[in-house]
Image (cartoon, rainbow, N blue to C red; front, side):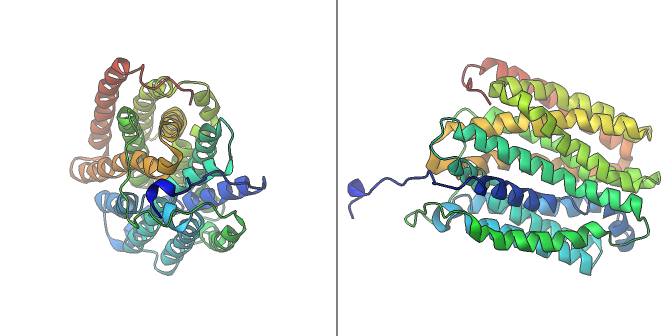
Length: 401
């Protein structure tokens, strides 16, 4: 058939209402697994004889698998449909968790983190596109879809660590904790339940491998999420060893939850702002929260640590995350949403990996206070420079988040 005679692809999906919360639950479970073992990292490190640098490197295996998935498979769901990548992602979560149950070592954690990274890479772009399609022809489908995906994933990233932390406090002698065992049947059932979701339109004419795209005018928002998630990565990958050194290993789960999921409370406020304004608020809150958090770690003050994590999270998974994701989702045509979201998350996960490994190396070589001080200085300098850049480009993104 001549290209001019092809019928346009319809992306809106007639869908029963339960499909939207079902997809949100499945995305929650994919991200729930990602930090499920965060409070156990000191145990794995002790069993393997490694320091903070190796722990950070094991966590970075997540990004090592995620970035290639985002880079090469950004448009995969356009060709094979949205459901298959989602089912595979849930099964990868199952496999990664089973791996650390079978071999509770830092090497196995690296393998599990690679499974989680590949899983997140498969749904990072397609999940946002699928959710938007489920909302149909609504004028606000792009913003509603991005908001629900941001809420489900930010809650998932933090809740896994929180549940494991609670298990360690309630039953400190139980190794591995119950949270890992309970996740397995939930992930398997959720993978099977993917069959209940509606089948979206496919595009068999598109290539198997497609690069992410950068939505016009959104590069500064990508840099903003890079800075924000750098703060998150340091908390998840480096802080647990500092807490364990003072006998507070179980609190690593609470620190992870506070730096990730409390940002959900600020997403309604972010939705009422334009993307640029939401990101500007985040550029103030990320370094401020990290300063308070770093003081809490160095001074072994748990309330300060959790308060700083919550302040940073208000931007990391609130203002910055939702504002940027909504802007990217609305800035491109429906056929490009999965690839554009993948491009946005490439910025995010670069920030989630390189600063974490660097901070872990600095902590091993110069001590945790020096590593946290340098991370704080980098966040302050980066946020200030980006704020100046956004002031110059504030007119390019004015749609509400």
